[in-house]
Picture 1 (cartoon, one colour):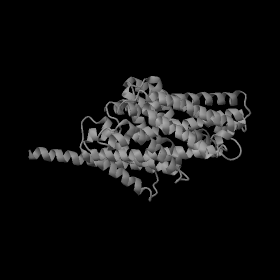
Picture 2 (cartoon, one colour):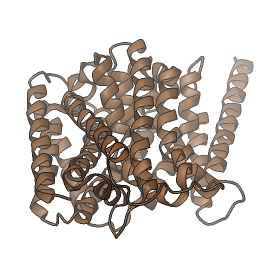
Picture 3 (cartoon, helix red, strand yellow):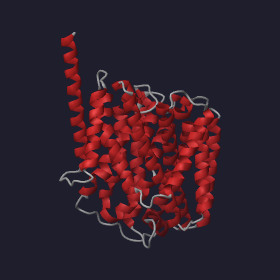
Picture 4 (cartoon, rainbow, N blue to C red):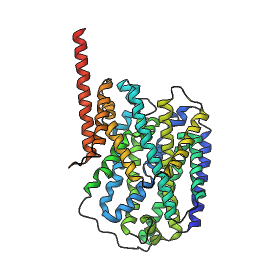
Length: 442
């Protein structure tokens, strides 16, 4: 890979994002502008930001790595996120946006009438999103090292630029830069695929797909990303920011289809294989297309990581500002909070050597505790009291910690969700009994 081309285009891409972020910051006047883009984001920018948020470095690099081992079964890896976006557009997103709130956690207060539940849900969201953000920092660091870029100043520079434009413009800056990064990623990946398919030199033949589905990875690949789409704050923000329910539906479904098509390209390169250590994707691209195109693909991977990271920073900030600060904060304080989140993730990344297991645990804990009560809130025909949601969250958390110690013949994630549903049913029963007792006494 041509390191000079890689560094030049990486810094050029970040410079363009910084310029767009600075421009976007001029239109940010209120907290609603900063976290929800003013609540009037149109179709094309909304599609781009949905796509850029979901297609991160983990999806691209992970798909290529797994494709070399399991063949076409790796399609399950991006399919969870893709199906999540499509189902979000088919109705879940409209129900989320119908609450007219700023965070997903606030739905718990609206439906269940409890600030305690809102803050508990928000805290779980913050922990999950921050761990994912750390994962993006760590992924970028390892990716640069695998390319032979071991200059710490390059790493600090491009993350510093990201933190600067994200903190300056909030959601408007995130959406503006997502347009640049999504376009760059799609264009470069399609170009690399065309060169490799029609004129490149294949390093190896396409790997034959395994006949046996890797069932032990089914939940981790498909179920958890699918369910997490409905409860994560960064997806909720985009639903709240859409200009209309119709725009939200079209943008989410369109982004899901685009995400699947984009994910096919790293899978294709992963199945072609490569040689040597480091990234399977970059090895295959370099041998199939040449060092200059490989450098551009490397920039595309970094763009995917950064487009996910800026969304996470903004989402974590919205949880902290909207759910834990009683009064509206001034704009300088809000911007400083975003900057501190990004800087904190960089420092925290040095405490981890392997983030994948921790990320899956953070997904799993949030889903076990929040998925059932949130879905019940979205489809509830009337307001409920504290008991059903609290019992659901407690049963889900108990299942999560219990199955850290006990092996189970079926995927533990499904059992945890079932326990959460049982807890909700018990809480609803207690709630109804209390109502009957109150009526009799009155």
